[in-house]
Amino acid sequence: MRNSIPVRFLALAALLAVLSSRAEAESGTAVISDIGSVNLDEFVQEAQSPVPDWLGPLDFPQVPVPREQDVFRDPATPVLGNPDGDVNVVEFFDYHCSYCKKVAADLRELIRTDPGIRLVMKEYPILGEDSVTGAKAALAAAKQGRYREMHETLMAYRGQFTPAALESLAADAQVDPQRMFNDMQGPDIQEQISKTLLQGRGLGFSGTPGFIFGRIPVPGAISLDDMRKLVAEARRKACASAPCLGSASQLAGDVLPVVSPDDHKQ
Image (cartoon, rainbow, N blue to C red; front, top):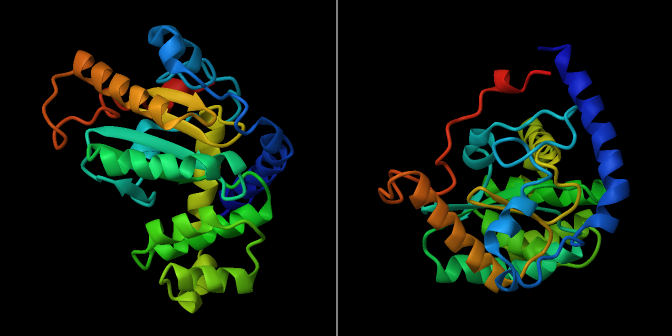
């Protein structure tokens, strides 16, 4: 166990360097502008191409394929909307991603108007060390029960996350700044970010934002209307593949069997 930690973090450091060099150019480029104008089944098939076999083929087999329960049900990952909702929507995002900032208001509206959405928030800081600082601040705020408030404050902010800026942003979000700074140094928060970086890479998300609607991956920013269509499609597919037993019994994002790590050994 002790020897595995340095190797893991060296690998993650190399991964972060590669992602940082590519992500800003790629983020938001795969924009789906008008899902309604194309055949949705064709769109779903195309969208699944960069991700692992429980969503589609994997394009970077050297990166571990994340298990389904780790993507949808990691207890350390913040969840907005309805924790018992009938559709999982997962977002991989970075606080310095301009496209993430553009879709933030639409996501708030989506969960406001659809009480069945369980929005899984994946802190995916691929645009540099300052992005990592922002992610740590958000996860530290979660320990005070103020994740949503801090997330929205960080997403609205345009600038570097200096200590003075974070202290002011924490105050705006009604977060205790000293406790936040202390918690940001915790190994559990670093570990959470490290896990999410590997999950995102394993899912084929080389830029931000990256979404999963039920079982439909979408690399790039999309409109609120398109989000609603994808949520409806996720619900339709869930009901087609398993009885619709209600949110407590059957979630639209959890209709497939858990993937075993043994299934993906090279």
